[in-house]
Image (cartoon, rainbow, N blue to C red):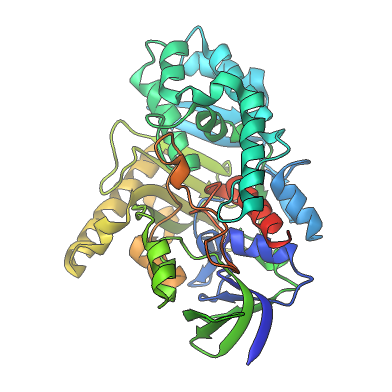
Length: 471
């Protein structure tokens, strides 16, 4: 029997970051796939490399969780700064999301003119800066020490943000950008769908600020694919690739972990699997009931990967906003990531391009195989045709090795069919899953628990979990 202090299931952002922080422990990490990184992995197909999802790497700056964790893990990523975080294109008009505030506002005033643009975006930026200055940010349950730290965090938030904590995003938009155009509102909501998995309708002002402010930070391109981050973080970790965990049994002083290859014992188990998929790993009635208490987040992604044979120059990131939702999607926009022209791995045979939009997981799960193929092709064709309309110097014959993925694809490779958890709103904040569970030694990490998806959100959750592990 293989005995460990900590067993981590899944090598996504959360699993990789928490493993890197505890590389001095007797730790093992299991990954079902052959590639590390889960939704953020890099994979090879027909001789070309592609990123599984969007490729914005943000938060690698002093006094931010990502940089803190990478520094503690003694890993320096191979990255370069993107001067334009993202170019947003809507009805042939474009706004460059850049870090320089005045440059951004000048652009906004031309494309989405409103006399209160500077007031609105300055408030958004200021709230974001206050948030990242918090010293006691913590959210965990099921332990007296956890509750005390969480209460202390709430008190700090109330002191720093005062009444802004209780203000809704929608009311702030309506008060500040009164008479806002449909185009402008779509510009805001389309970016929120990427960053916090929802629109401005049901979220607090603080969530609005965090969701819109990431381009005011340094945004980076990762050389050799997003997967290189996970490979670097886990270089000194005992990683078992292509080993799927089938069952976890809680015993008196440890957890018995059964994989498709072996059995293990661990005092502590950290699940980087989705909170919604975790119940299937257990037979224990109480543990299953705990995980089943979280209602499924049906949000997922439709992703297209392709190689582009072109000599044109492209930015790293674009977002195209349409007038209505895409076919089989819940979004009226799609996000495009281009590899850097000088990336020797991803751009060896042309640009490596990843295009993604939001969809519902159950949409693809609940249709026949024949209908699945039809709807998948409809969605792919629509996006590619619109892509060609917006990039007039790209021809259809320049596109090679195109393939698309749905929630069913994710389930096959990384054992989850949703992407991200539920956005933290006024209605569900108290139901947000905690990294600590009611069961000693059992924890969760990743984008379906506090503090949500994306590198910064997951990193906050990892720092909280690390404190809980090392009380």
